[in-house]
Image 1 (cartoon, helix red, strand yellow):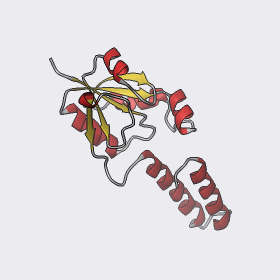
Image 2 (cartoon, one colour; image 1 turned 90 degrees about the vertical axis):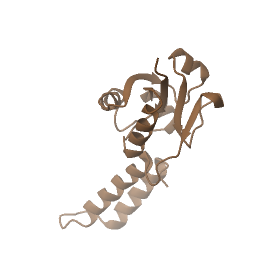
Image 3 (cartoon, helix red, strand yellow; image 1 turned 135 degrees about the vertical axis):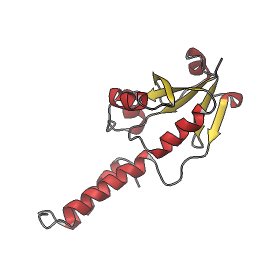
Image 4 (cartoon, rainbow, N blue to C red; image 1 turned 90 degrees about the horizontal axis):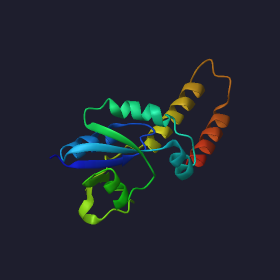
Amino acid sequence: MSKRIMVDMSATLLHHGHIRLLRKAAELGAVVVTLTTDEEVIKTKGYVPELNYEERKEILESLRWVQEIVPGPWLVDDAFLEKHRCDLLAHGSDNFNKVSPEKLVIFPRTEGISSSILRERVLDSLISLNCNSSSSTGSEKVARFLIEAVKREFRLE
């Protein structure tokens, strides 16, 4: 019988770092994603996710490395692994889950990418679009002020 490997993620903005983690986890067994609920994202990160739970779930279900998706809390523990009959938790090197060391597999994070970095890229693109466009009516100083305020609010600094 194949091992069941849990991967916990919020995947508010899915990127190649998530894909690499799922692919590596699939080398160990059948991947069960515990997808952080919208309520947990709001409570922990302080904002409404760009994609809601059902949208994120649909995307993850389409990936060949994912066999099952269960709603989950921000952090998982041994009891959560047992409840879902998972043998191991696979996570990036930024793990804060309270899982026994023998049930934890840590993979290096993909350098230079995160959902926060993607958010910042989007904001920078919006500034560029609005400030460099000949049809722009706003001032670059106002746009820069607003973007910096958004970055602070979403902890993107």
